[in-house]
Length: 307
Image 1 (cartoon, rainbow, N blue to C red):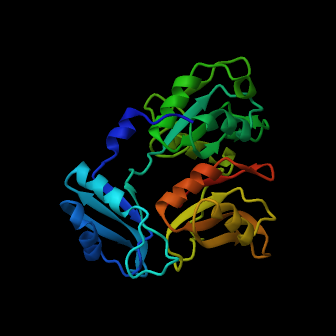
Image 2 (cartoon, rainbow, N blue to C red):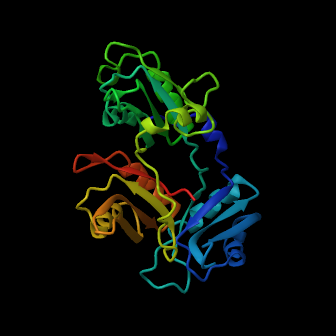
Image 3 (cartoon, rainbow, N blue to C red):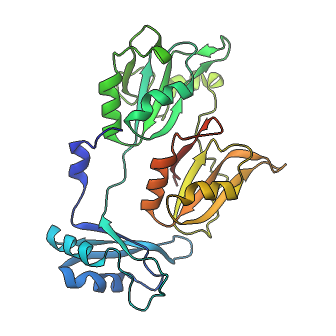
């Protein structure tokens, strides 16, 4: 796994805290009152569900100084608020980390027989893989000689590029050195800003040759809006895995409050589903632990659901 780069470290604001497991009774005003004894609170917000307008059980607090923020963490992290049931979850207070910036990489000089799972295994050691695709030439029954790997951070993409560009990797490139660079680079003939997996003009010309992407949540099947928390998209679910099996898989990483496996009209699995976790931290833990993990010889693709 790649180390965090300096550019990502600089994006972290040590004065901004995320507070998980807030009781439903806590409002933005009472959240500010809760943290006020530790310093000047510049901003406090409880995150609400867009549909129900109810608390999603977490929020953010911004202090004027790093010292005040640290005092609040020391005092409130792991504390059960007064008036709560003895078995209520203690607060989890930590410095809020910025959302990860995904980077799509173009990988050239692939073997005609290169497989997606081999490409994933080469890149997996640098970070979490969000998407992976090798376009196929169906007429020739082989790859087009290039592919795309989307990693979940700039740091991971930079490490992968530094370690793999111009390197020979026999499993996917044979005796030829790989070409690895950002897919949205202006000098990349296969990548462009108009399409996450390639140049818009090129894709229109060859659309009938493009296979289905490894991961693409259909917009017509959103997860139930009655679920609260953070929604995670799961692709490559084994055909025999139901909601109970999926819940058991995710329960290791936190509180699961909703699970849905998408099915065809005949009730067979479509191979993807949604899991709602209690907090963004638990969702990220699940993504980190399960993305790329083989289940029944199929590597799971796990990522935050995009709106």
